[in-house]
Image (cartoon, rainbow, N blue to C red; front, side, top):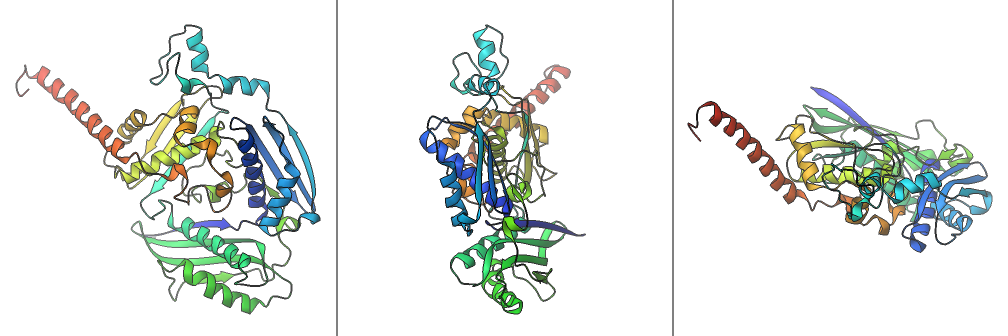
Length: 418
């Protein structure tokens, strides 16, 4: 059976990604001066304007306009062409109260019986409740070294190379805005060939389009597809609309959180809808998504599944997730309910535990703003250090279930065979 999968990616200077980079740069500046800073930063970029809004509670003031100008320059734009407007306020006291002391800790303090597995009255991981409600998803597949879908890996690789060629002047006359799309042909579930590659890149008005296509084929496609070569039948479309002179915020308004599929799994796995960029790690849209990916990747590394999806649901102000679910898509060695039990044994999924285990107060979040949140092995949630613990838990679950089954069989047979 032949099927196709398509993913897109965008360059760092794409208007939406520019906004993500600004938001995460502000977040990092806040965390540098206050590790406990609460940040929910939104950015909009349009012709001649950058608008920063949101809620920030930080021990020290950061120079937001300076940060915006520095990011614009880094992304390849001229800061003096933009008017920067800032509309920030502190985090709501009601939200802060629920985050500062989780529901479990409040109940324990009131002598209410607590049934959660990990909690106790003095448990430090009850110090933080989830900063919002919602469901986050993590996904991993053994299809690529990055444990991400192949078309997404290739599309991200193209955009990263385009940016590198622009900054290094290897290809002259290209500008910051651009995107790529890759379609992979699968036969019986295995990637066989590249069907289509689409690249749109902003360029100078005097840039010769034939020369641009030749340069992109030579300097971008050759290296990006070295390990999965194009063939004679691969359709390659470079700037299929023709001229792409007017780009960036001048042509397309940008917003934070509008490239969620690029940030995560290319649309080939579930997405909860919450944006990641511009949010401090008490927001489970971010920390929960990182934890779900961490769990999924370790499950695949432990060879408990060839691909899997982990879903975590949270309630605002509550530390423990209200739902944990694992799907193996028929590729797992154990049923999904057993995988879920194993995950609950091995991982603590409370926000404070996630922040501590993944060291999320000390991450450089600007590294995640471009080319996806799960494409760098240097990020702590991309580590695969729990596969041994998962395999051990799997053995324990199987042995416990087998013991129950044989115990029931023994009772029914009057002790024979025990």
